[in-house]
Image (tube, rainbow, N blue to C red; front, side):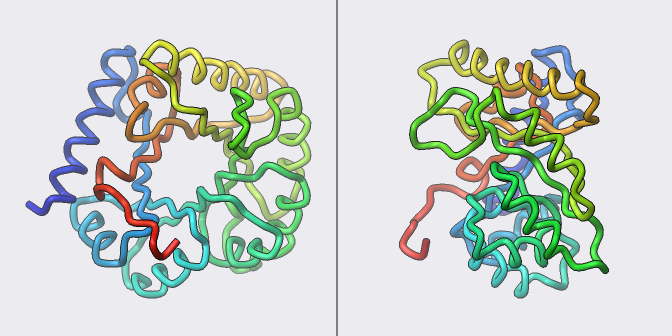
Length: 231
C-alpha cells in the first residue's frame, strides 16, 4: 500500500470516528482530497486507493492536471478564490465551485457554463467568523446571495462553505462551525434546499463533523506537506 493510500485510510477512519462520536452516520460526510501543488501522479495514487473527488485552489494548475488525468473518472472541485478573469476556466472544467462570494462571479459562471455540461454545482463561501484574511460573504448577506444564485440557470446551488481562522482547541473550533451550521439551517428554513456544508480541514475536521459538516476538505493529512514554489 502506498503512503497516500495509507494516509487516505487514516483520514477516512478519522471521519468515521468523528461521525460516530457525534452520533452521525459515517456515510453522511464526504471526503474531498485537496491536491493543490501536487502533481498528477499523486492524484492517480489517491484514485487507485478509491478517492475520486479532488479539490484544487489554483485554477490554471488544476486545468493542466485535469488534462493529464482526463482518462480517469475524477470529480474536480474549485476551492480557491475565483477572479473574474478565471470564471470561464472554472465554468468549463470543474464540476463544483465552493467559493462563490459575489453575484457577479456567479452570473459569469452561469453564463459561461457550456450547455453540453450539467449545471455547475456551487457553494456560497461565508466569512463566518469575520476573519480579516478570509474571503466570503458576511453571514447576514448569505441568504440574499443564496436566493440570487439559486435563480441562475446554469448553476445548481448546493450549500455553504467556510474557512474559519484557526481555533485554539476543539471546542472553540466547534463553536465557530456551529455558527455556520445555524446559518445553513436558516437558509434552508427560508425555502432553499441545500444539502452541502463544506467545512473542516486536516487540523479541525473532527470539530467540523461534530457541528454538522457534510464535506471535509483534507490535503496535508493525505498528500503531506506542501511546497508553494509553483503556486
